[in-house]
Length: 295
Image 1: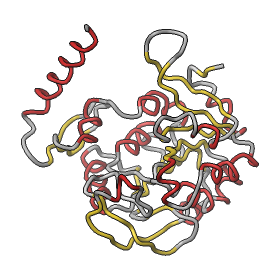
Image 2: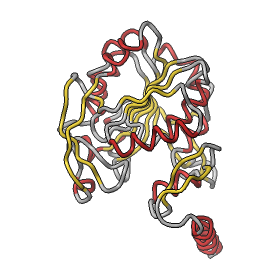
Image 3: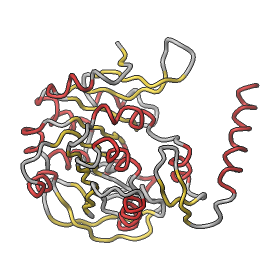
């Protein structure tokens, strides 16, 4: 009973907080301190504002990406994660933000400019396994656009456009001889293709990777979680799923649970969607600084 009352009060408080935004986009300072142009009618924008998205990433990214380093954000969307990465690597570092949706890329550029994040380089392209171009479905919900829309995304397709496709290896060659320490990947089923297009980076730099796994998006792309395993496991990567609930104590907390494979995790995911952290032997000590890691 008390839980329901608290939830109702929380919803009312949220509505009151956003009621004064008006219609359309408005500049708001989100929970991280960064400025973003947000629409109160957009559930994702409300989540950015209230800090209700990717709590583990927010908490631990500064332990995984360090000042002065070069990192890559595949599927940067409006820049929520790219701005966190920019804060982690600082002015001496570089964040390469790869985003194919021109609407999201435009907002990303505005957000970086407003927050003075000159260390963010925007690449308006989709990540893939070969340089070129591809059809891309724009969704009415920014963040749900995809080369391979799943059934949920297909219902919101607004139009199809052609976008450039870049490989991470190609982007790395343009950056020059700098180590790449961290890659975040949220690209709606294109993850195996992006991994195939970063073989050189994986071999040379073995970056930590933070990846969203979406089983329906992978299926729409003609891929499977096993395709991720086939690339990363031979390189010695360990797999940690981000788990939000502790079975030991009766409160929610962030845990990392190690798994033998990405494929093995799908059956346990209620909706087939979850985050994993892929840790190479090179960065095992760095990952050990986050926590807690479930035994």
